[in-house]
Amino acid sequence: MTIHHYELCGADEKHVFSPHCWKTRMALAHKGLDFETVAVPFTKVATVENGEGRRVPVLRDGDTVIEESYEIAKYLDRAYPDKPSLFNGEGGEELTKFVISWSLTQLHPAVAKLAVYDIHNALAPEDQAFFRQTREKLFGCTLEEFDAKFPKNGEALATALVPMENLLGRQKFLGGDSPVFADYVVFGALQWLRTTCSQDHLPQEGAVADWFNRLLDMYDGMGRAVKAPA
Amino acid sequence: MTIHHYELCGADEKHVFSPHCWKTRMALAHKGLDFETVAVPFTKVATVENGEGRRVPVLRDGDTVIEESYEIAKYLDRAYPDKPSLFNGEGGEELTKFVISWSLTQLHPAVAKLAVYDIHNALAPEDQAFFRQTREKLFGCTLEEFDAKFPKNGEALATALVPMENLLGRQKFLGGDSPVFADYVVFGALQWLRTTCSQDHLPQEGAVADWFNRLLDMYDGMGRAVKAPA
Image 1 (cartoon, rainbow over the protein chains, first blue to last red):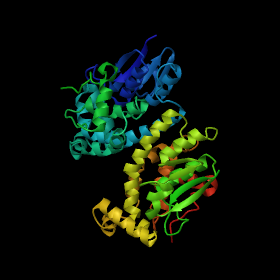
Image 2 (cartoon, rainbow over the protein chains, first blue to last red):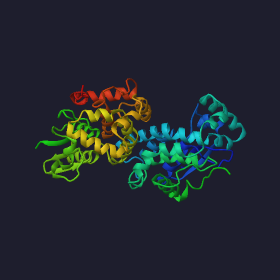
Image 3 (spheres, rainbow over the protein chains, first blue to last red):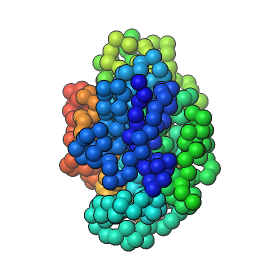
């Protein structure tokens, strides 16, 4: 039975840009599983699969419906144990949560400061209204005021990435010689920036840049195929 | 045969304060292994176990001599597989390197800015001279100038600890219900501050404070027994 992956999309249904959905995309590809994307705009997310207040990604695999990228990754490892593991054991599954916490608290704010206005502009009109309302409430100011607060360069992001840059100078992936879900967690944050921001503020050289390019090339260039709207 | 643990010490041989040696202390206790500390002042570190340019911790276990706290932890897990694991599998062993990289690049600088002058003052005279010479070369200024540059409060450290604070609000340890080596990596950085700094700049409340207190209490309060010199 086909796996359905409910993913956030922009005005263009093919424009999938959510960091969390990219984690799940890469996890599915890692497992070698075919899946069908069900593109969901912001205003439809809460009602996916008859849920109440759901958040994407949501995965339907046969009769099983799971929400949240880390939960989905754990499900995939249990449901498909013969495919390459996303965690390589219980210890890896636990420490992945630290990488998630680090990425959410250090990388996501840096990306949001660069890309929030571009994200808004990439949405369909009714989703723009929803996005503006929810984010302005969160930020306590207008999107334009938020956007104007922060310099548009990659310095804050590069600073946040120092622990990755330091480690990836000595190994190919967080998982060692091959990637694990923790790699996709960090990939998701940078891919969110790459697929939304009108300017390229990603590291252009160094260990993180090389690592990101390796991941963009994997799985038939699945990551590279999606670009920010012109 | 007794395990010997070569550990950095201050003017008082009982004053063991190195973050890296504390990682190994906790790892040995985690494994339930008895060990004997061989206290080593800064000026003697390079010649431990007839080495050339060694760095502590160094562990001698029978005929085996190992250097560097992560390598020691891996050795302990392999040599004593019947005792509780420090990594819980290959994935945990790999991701521990990210926690190490994060701690070294985010926590250690924050601690050094608070404690470097107190560390100097806790050393024997010949070690003070060595410490001053090596650190002033590293910092490109005198110890006094370095110390004067940074405000003496816990704000920068608390900011660096946000990924831990966020995660430990939902679970007891980085390892889940019980600690793993990654917990001891972060513990080492905070214990370094606690055992050297004349003022207490550690988080006083919240998830990290609770977690740190739990670890200080473990293993018969081994961590709590060592204090900063009066």
